Image (cartoon, rainbow, N blue to C red):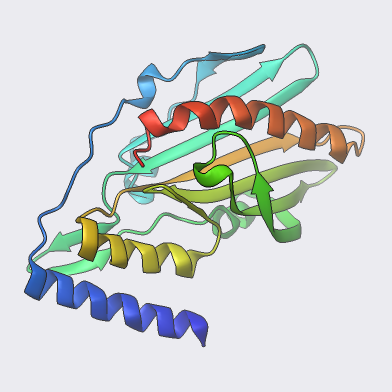
Length: 219
């Protein structure tokens, strides 16, 4: 019921904004992820990931960072930040949402099963406001286990729920002329069922990454 109400509110706000406010899109200045550092403290990314053109088109992403950061011989954290310059696609005099795809919708298609799915409050240095609501998943493929965190970080907010993200897109479009946003995702292999170690690796690298995000994902 809540999702339906939010969807109707978003459509109404989008219609009003497009037809009555005529807000010109605001494209904020930002750095490109090609300049994002590949050494963060004692973490290093030896090779940036490159998405196929078809994948980029399907995601609707404007710019992205895809790197596996490693520390020592036994720690690695896959990092993906996808920036969308706009989440509203305007064509033929109308408007349609160009949504960021939630990872939990894509993981099963990649052969991963979600065996634990939680929404948690996370406090990390570098997050807007110092904390936010995020998704914490444990996924499995055969004998492999992986800890995954993800959230939507957009225009100074961190949220985990799709309906909230959609609502803020409509509000910010009406008030600020902005619909840009990003998906932030970290993936950590769980070795020997040591979930605590995977959690510690995520938190350490994420702190380094989050301190630098505002240059690439404007507040």
